[in-house]
Image 1: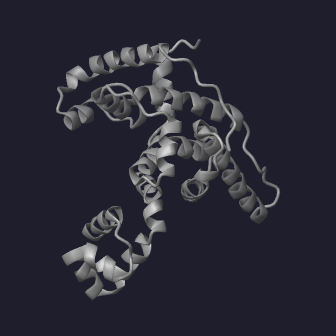
Image 2: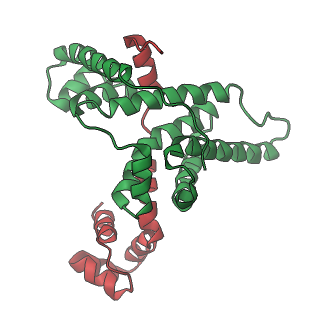
Length: 83
Length: 184
């Protein structure tokens, strides 16, 4: 069995630095992207009325735009709009 | 201190469409995929980012086809390796004569496997130990920065690190090493 002394542990902990935060976030949002997040964010950037409607009531605005009820998607849209 | 969910349990939750499980899976393996791309294959940052995103996009797409949920790590390693090679080959076509694959890839991935094993053990330690060890070793933060972030006197950081390393060692000694498995 490997001897995990302090020096060995230090080396192994240093071996795996964190991936860039933005990369991780983008990968974590893959399911949301598949459900339309990218399109919604792009439309919100291009369409002021749509963007303002999302700010007022994201859930109903998405419903009216044809998206199924999806709390995760609503939260992600709100987060993108506020960032 | 928490008992970490196994890889198989996490993959099973992902299959149910649980967004939180997917976020956790990305979080668990992001360092590993990143390290394979930049350490084993020495890809430049822009290429590494493309590979990183493609690995997780394909993993998300193909997760239902994975035959052994517990084999997610070697499966991701293999996928990352293949995509890194594709990237290098694509570059080599533009610059004929260059070697298609760096040397020592197997050794580097074996080292990363062991490092991930240690990180998994780290994930079972109390939150304060996880944070202090990660900040000091993986993020290379100074005692002062860690002390400021965690609201601790900088003079106590070294002894805390030492105590947490003892806990980590104890956790590792209570485990059986996980052999490499073949993926989906």
